[in-house]
Image (cartoon, rainbow, N blue to C red):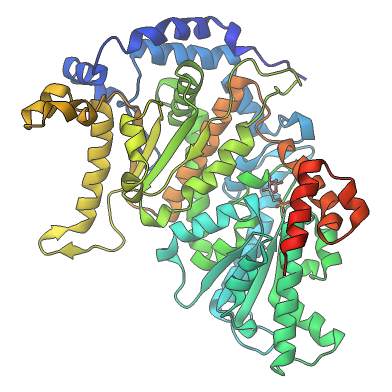
Length: 560
Ligand code: F6P
């Protein structure tokens, strides 16, 4: 196993440490930079496929950029990227290749990994998914009573939920009329109860999505929804109450997505109705695998192929663009700059698009499950801070909630602003174009964060002296603006791939395995251990620590 370079010992790290205190050399540095350098915006604005990315409102100088690019060289990011793309087992703690980029390679490409052409495998499954999607969309796939499918319910959690639900919400305008998807993830029984309450079981198709097919939440929800669906069909007289009739109904109403096809069969789903993927696809990197089957049904094979093409165009950009114009590389390095040299603890992602409302939640798993690590890939402790907290809400809602802290708080919070030039729902309020009003907020916020407002400017508005300090905006708050012409399947694929590669770059600098997630295991085990105590087993209760014992006892006393 290759030992990771300790990034803190590199010459570029030392240069960056020296540069950091010189950047903010007085108030309103960004104003001065932009005034003195009319070419700044153009120099720091880049294209990556359909994305227009403006990095100019960051705490970034040419010297810093050069040092960050040197840092990338010194830790060997290009070699690690190539190792990932070619299928080396860079996920060392699970001894796995990391090949989500193979999921979006075009048909006809080939990549042999461990003796197998993985691109051929990918397209074989994709073809099956597309054929299935067409059957459902055309009404050829019918339920147990011969009715076409109206609602697809995806049951999954983590990567088997967040990607599909985010993408479905983002691409609602592309969803076939008359088809709806719902997503059940939480083991809180409310989730399944609410999402099935008004469903017609005769026109419902369930996709059970689980890479391992062993996840407690997903299997529990799948069993509950199976019981709901079969019992409802029996109760209405739609099917007979026999094992054969129930099995036949499962075959018509349940399909599965998994790498564990044997467990799919054990659950009672015919493997002929299962779509596989591979251990080299991490859960949080899987929306473009069979895990996206609900999306493929919703937006159709053509839309899904465009989605994959978007990912691929950013994969190509990341692999081939020169470092000084390589957007995922630059954005990943900027994040390192803020986390390690500016002590930024979080990063906001603010989509100016209602359809993108689940994008920050999706990014939370992608970034935080990947880079929330304290040891490096060789098991040694990390040498610097890792894994910032990602969060966000769509604009303009966030403006009226938490932007106050970004503008005037004591913490540095780098923020990515996302917007699309063309509205899905062009609307006028009198003579005002509402989308333009919306975008004006997007433009205004990044300017306000960068350039702020001085005390003189506040006074010039006639503000009483006593409240001038409260109305001053310091500015110099870093933002990146990402724009695209419209929110299409292709552009969404590009945005996801962009953040996948940003996450990769950060992890590579820190020397961590961004592709395992051991930190979720302990809680899962303890939940199973405490479950008997919760249900009334006193011996199990006594075995708990005193706090857990107290909480469980309180619960047992108060449940109805
Ligand atoms: O939370 C841990 C995790 O393993 C995620 O990485 C994964 O996306 C999620 O659980 C769901 O796993 P599965 O798809 O195997 O059900």
